[in-house]
Length: 599
Image: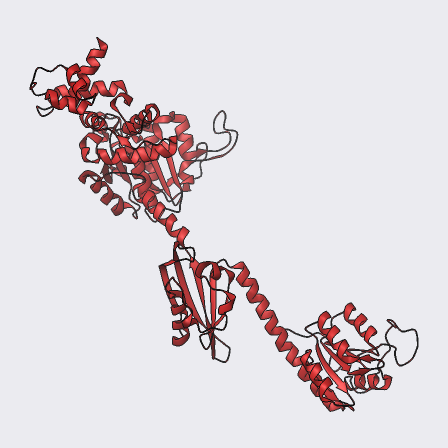
């Protein structure tokens, strides 16, 4: 509630004795009214402004005789209340009332007159006068009306402050806000609601239930339910249509507005647009669950199931697989689809660093620990605290680091290089290797106790040649990805390319396939990648593999005596049609073309 500090009152009357009397009424008994500085009059007469302060009631009272002095006082400071004579010497109190309301709209004005007439009183009320009293004014009347007026102003100021606070909140919050009164009529809405829902100022005061919205009006229905039931309502992730025709995902929270006396004065609904958040969550979910992993084969479905089962547990995971099978993608999926997704995800390629550098990189070091250690360094273990540490090519670490890593896995403790104080971390470990660790244990090149510590759960990544049913899907995925990266407009690959791909063993697995398609996308002169866009070594290897493969891929005997040149001429250069005319496979056609070019 607004607290008045010495409410200020201005008395405007052209009679000195009346000014003194009215000021005296508001003073404490026995107080004197002291003259203030003359603010405009040069005569020491009844026109001189006067000021007194009531110590009992806390009022600061100023008194002036005319319109001009009153305006000067209002321009110098704010007044809460003014008593104005309706007839001033040669002037109209109605004119002064009009000027006061222009200068200080919140000031309450009480008009006084010794000749009560309907017309002036009506005009005063129309211009915003708070009340109208007749002279002579008794002390009791003046004190009563003063208190009543100031109490009314206090309530009005409280309401204005409340509205100002609400407006500030509305401007600050980006959510849409809709308010209805106790009758369910639209009372207020934030500008964002106009954007979200299409509300406009013409609808203020209308029954909210009758306001038609193309979105179905679930926010309005929820708001009215909260009002009628006197209990909060919440709708999460509701899809609605915005005025611009686009679909949005919103959360709706509706709450009744209950006053201090328990009376429900209305309800308010907050509409939060979560469209971008939902899109981001979907994108993050797609990346975190499979991190760009593509495949519909049964072997990949088993990998997905393992990722989902292991995502929320702290157990160490060892990922096996040939180079290029996507081990790093699986490690990322394990982290980002689990409870540690918002925590650090730190990666280290153990084969890329020498033993001293790897030790410093993993454990950190203190200044002066070795030559070149000019400052303390935080290791990857500390960086990954409460998150995940992915150690790729784990088979390449030295026996010394194997021993130190074992302690971290056992106790969660380690020391920086050159430091004797132990540090404790909470890290989820994921390891990857393309080597047979069990065989390395037998050979004595990898610690058996460490092997058992890190080999708690295994995820075996299948080679690309073992998941041929994923080949078409991977080709489509990588072409779309490369079009964005390279700015190309490749639409796909020819059937001949698919034949070559199916005949190739892919020693580099998925990574090799991506690099092959990237090269082909750069060299391709049309929208379809052809065999001539592929690396020659890949074609050679594919053709060699065909010769060594099963009889299904072996070329059948020719059905006629056509030469390759004749078949190509008859088919208009279409190699697939030429192969049919000759009764051989398309791969054999390419092999013979390549052989002819070489000769």
